Amino acid sequence: MTRVFLASFILMGVFLLPYFAYIFGRDIPFSRTILDIGNLLWPLAIFVVLLYEDKKEKLGIWRNPSLEMNLKTVILSLALGVLWQLIILLLTSLFDAPNTDPRESYTLATLILHIFSFAIIGPIAEELLLRKWYISVMERASFGKIAIVVSNALIFYAAHVGTGVWRLDTLIMAVILCLTYMRTRDIRYCVITHVTCNLLGIFSAYYFV
Image (cartoon, rainbow, N blue to C red; front, side, top):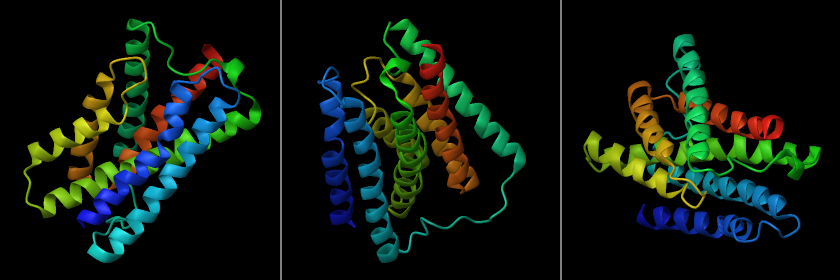
């Protein structure tokens, strides 16, 4: 398991390289496209690692306890995603930093690519890795709930540094998402929240910036 764990983070590091190209080279042509391609590649790498890990350790990463979802919890998950994006907008305004690129940087093709990579594939991969897989592994190792939640929040925060603002929202939301998964054992609620937040982030920039 240790080798798989290390391999997953090595792969994440490799496929996060486009982020650095984007952050330090915003004026380079196609920097947005480079970033979105990276956003597609690293989730695919995570999916491959999780498939191997699930087959070997039988963690049940791809299984949910029930096909049915609780409507009230779905609505709360959607509302939480909206609240998350509002917090991000508040933080970006306080730090006088843009939430994302203005709409002039998008064409229809890049917008579709950005939605697919940043708002769909990326959040699914993050929730499977950082919530379902990470919590399962930590629980198997007999770590307590507080240790799991705190360490998860710190990892989630570290994964979102370098955006120009102090991402306090990632610390808060990681705690909420961890507790949500621990209570429901259904990662789909976490995915709904994450996807909702990222979608709103894209469209708020595209239509209102």
